[in-house]
Length: 335
Image (cartoon, rainbow, N blue to C red):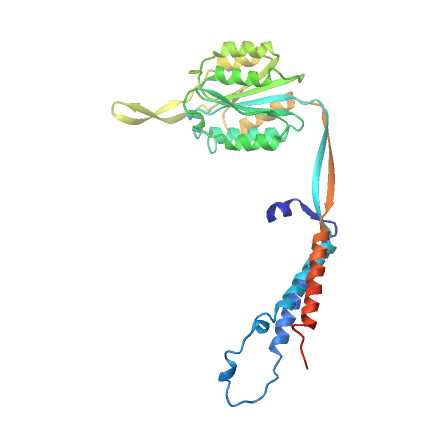
């Protein structure tokens, strides 16, 4: 709760906050003055003084503690803490975009750093941050497809869902490109935006699923949706674990994907096909799509402040008043 308050709080006069250094200075002089109190008288024994304590002696430092707290609160109040609320007003029409992720087992291959899926998530998150004003959704697929996030302007939610994507999120493995594309089209078909885009990212050959890619492609064309396809995978051979009659064995195999299918899905819907071989290439592809699908959106940001100094001022004054009352009544010192 405190960290959340600090995150959204600023000070109108932050140059007054160094005055808080007065408090440790006050503590230093208080301790020093206690050490200098050397008044004494001689007695024959101190045995009877060992157990003479009461609530006053136990609480003798309370007035000074209240003074330190009160001074600290008054200094914070003078610095005028304020809660900051940012409001954005969007003028213009954005683009509706669905990010369609392949999360099959082969997306954990480590020819990308740290692997294909994590690299894709990182670049997609940066893409989302660069698309203010757009409505963005997320679809994931392996042998099945699933809408992880419907299209929304709440990019914080989109980024959180991208971060949650992991292999094994869906129960069966496979690469149902047609199902993933069809689900993405379904998210966009009722959109009234002038521009609707699907960014389909996969590293495999289509198999599994109930909807063939050709059918999903016709659906995208029917609703005027452009499909940008990204084939993920390097040209080098990877170690792949295979099940055989002798148990699990490791074989060298080049990871393949149906490049012709991805090109066809892109060109026939008005999009483009890209091949990403490493992290840098993947980032350039998203940058290219970002330039191709530009939108004219003006975002005006308004900052609204709510004064928060009064509770500090009130609490500080109460501490000072209570300290003075205690010092001149219950804890009054007599010469």
